[in-house]
Image (cartoon, rainbow, N blue to C red; front, side):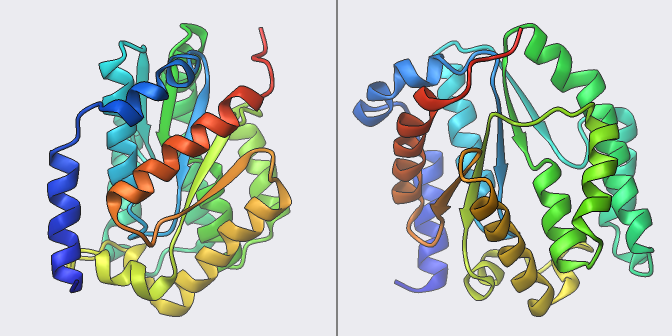
Length: 243
């Protein structure tokens, strides 16, 4: 199958999605996620956004109160910051400025959206969180992880996800899935994105209790099945919710 054929097949599979026997089998696990914070991570082009939408649709089909957020953005201030961060006109931005802007957007998102949703016992699904900053501005960009972690503690009030789902794909395959209209982060080049991937894998290796790595190189339905299997395995083993 050619790359173009694969993208077409993936798109058809995504639009055809509806809860079936495999999804129904995971219903108890999915509905037990009330009050949990689940983050989707992965390099640009990994396909995590497709799986993110499918899980959000499944949660909604099961009537699980779900709050969906993305980074950067999600608030009025965050969306303005997102425009600055992704605009290719800002290629000369200082790396610490870049990191701090991501954290500023994150601080607004945690305060205005994520924390209230968790207090209301919603499942919070986030498309990226602190792990992204560690991978992009840390491992790939060169900022010390200790500096990023210190700012993250302030920005998030020490909020940590219950589970990070890392969709892993090598840089060459990921680049073929990207739109030709690259944003500022996507356009940073192959060597940069190789370091991003390794940065993610290093985080997962260092904290296997919080991270689950999913092979994103397969067809979209196979990745979806792996995601459900991962949730079936990992959710019952999550730490008890605080409060």
